[in-house]
Amino acid sequence: MKKSMKFIAEKIRMFGETSLCKNPPQPYLEKGGSNKPPLAPMNRPSCGRGSCCVSESELQMRVRGNSHYKPEKAAFTLAEVLITLAVIGIVAALTIPPLIQSYKKQVASTRLKKFYSTMEQAIKLSEIDNGPIKNWKKEKAGSAKDGEHAREFYTSYIKPYLRVTDEDFDGNIVYLSDGSTFGLRNGDCIDLDYDINGRKSPNIYGKDIFIFLICVSDNIWGFSNNQPLKPYAYRDVILREKLLELCKSSARYCSGLLMYDNFEFKDDYPYKL
Image (tube, rainbow, N blue to C red; front, top):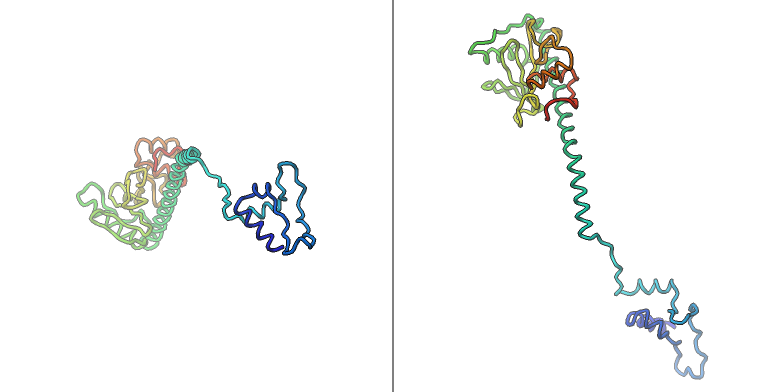
């Protein structure tokens, strides 16, 4: 019987299922089979005319055992691949720029809040040691020594209460630990040009540079004299609509609008970061 099964397997590999169906194997007879009863035929389903006398389960076993059998693999056509890539490109073009802009606004907002909080805390600590800010010494603006006077004010009243990584007094630039910087100018107040990303571009007011003021006397700047650190905006401009108009007219005034909005960049902020 074992020899008979090997014979059938060889036939399947050589001729395939068709030849087996047309020429079903005969039962094997041992030597001298003429005087011995034949072996019982293998159980097969009944065959119709032109049908193959192989059960479904047996056919599956033979197909799996046939080393020449290779199932067809599904694949995308070139047109389908190109259409898919085009759709992905369109979706990316629509979604990625707004995500990048949103991320830039979030980073700028976080940096501004941190800077304002840090400077406000430094001024309050300095007032403990040096008295009220209205008594601090500040030279009048308009001389050739304005840069020197701004450095003197910073060194005396602000520097001891800040963590800085570097100072460039040739350009009056102070470097903070998070990579941001601020420049010093002596005007009606001490002007701080805060750059949220330091030396990186674009270095443009309203985009990555924002002006804040340290005022030691009552003047036209800021929302209130109770604020130690003021935005670059007129004191009597307290409505958001007016602050927005100022920001649109000159990016130097945008710190007032941002401070009013809790340093959040609203949808109507006029400059793209």
